[in-house]
Amino acid sequence: MRTFPVVGSPKEESAAWAASLENDGNAFAEVFDLHRDRVYHHALRMTANVHDAEDVVAAAFFELWRLRKSVRVVDGSVLPWLLVTTTNLSRNLTRGIRRYRALIASLPRAIEVRSSEDAALEKIEELRLAANLREAMSTLAPADAALIILTTFEHYSLAEVGAALGISDGASRTRLHRARTRLGVALESLEQVDGDFMTKGRNR
Image 1 (spheres, rainbow, N blue to C red):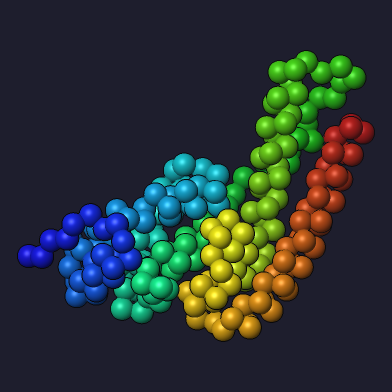
Image 2 (image 1 turned 90 degrees about the horizontal axis):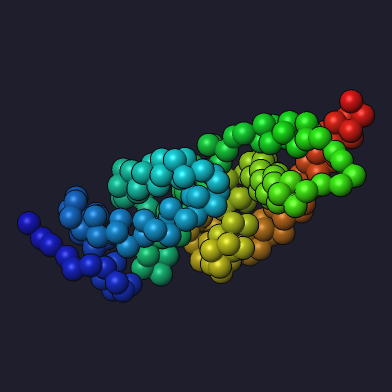
């Protein structure tokens, strides 16, 4: 049975991945150890829930193993493919948005608010904005959502993300521009909905 040192370089990852393609479970474990933290933090950012993030990580690596023969490797790494897959899996787990809206709409209003209430309202506003972003992202095609997330939050180049998605650099640029436009429209619509909820809450 082959064993590998802890993966710490692109060359070592390439060797471990090549062995994984030959059904070497130990080598796949090395790839898992290399990327699990990055994938987890990305899943947590997408789901805003520790348990959901853990489920997404498990599912993403399961898919990596199951589909290993067809995974696109970018610059010797499977991480871009993992992040795209994590994005798609996380989108299917997004929930609780209307609960946040209902909470915001039901909050009592007062002329003078204690500092502790200010902190609570600020936290709720952060949750609202994050929830709106996740809901707006869910309106995009999976590839478009991946383009925005991986270039904005993971700092991959368009060429790298395009390679992971199997589309050209030119197509990536066009899709990213259109996706940003659609995302902006979706966010504006959600903000309008929130504004309507707030108005109804104050008029009760």
